[in-house]
Image (cartoon, rainbow, N blue to C red; front, side, top):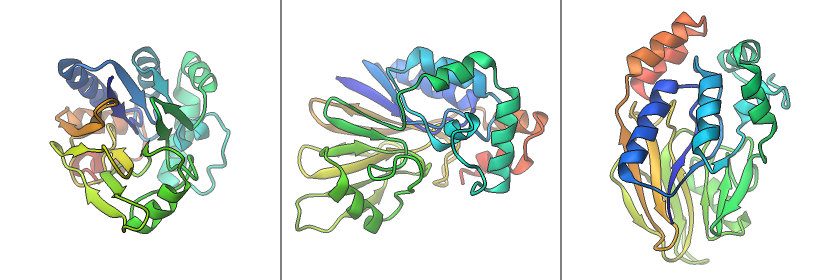
Length: 245
């Protein structure tokens, strides 16, 4: 089966539409979403409803849980906390009902582990270096796991139990063969990339050949940034979209 993996939309309708258009042109059997449909952006309800319609896997992320008042936002940055409160006040009731009905922050499909943040902490942990990846590769039961949360397209691999973990950024066009070893793969963020590339990110995985390909997609970033400003959200949340960090 060929699947598209997306994560961290963050209420960016413009990016989501572009990614789904690219996915449709590529041709996949299913779309798996790793969480954070809302937060930061100006279109939370629209994104939630689109994701519900298009995705066979729809995980919750920490910003989704914040919108549902299921986690404490006191540790959020001021702008993240403000966007969580804005989402609570502005998102449509039907979108809240969709989020309340989701299965959680982790799942498994086709023998692949799916987590919003990490295998050992699906809500909060940012896996951004080899030491953290080492711990999670030890922890995860699956040979391959998919993670989001950091907004960085990258992958970690360990060829055998005695080898060191390799950590590699994954720009658009990166292709992998994951036929052996253990793997942690992050498709990057579709709605708010933080790896220096403002284009929306997603990954394509063949669950039978264990091949993967990372994609980047142009979208109207300035329109998404302007929508954030018009909504009364912190302007720097829009400005950072233009730079991809």
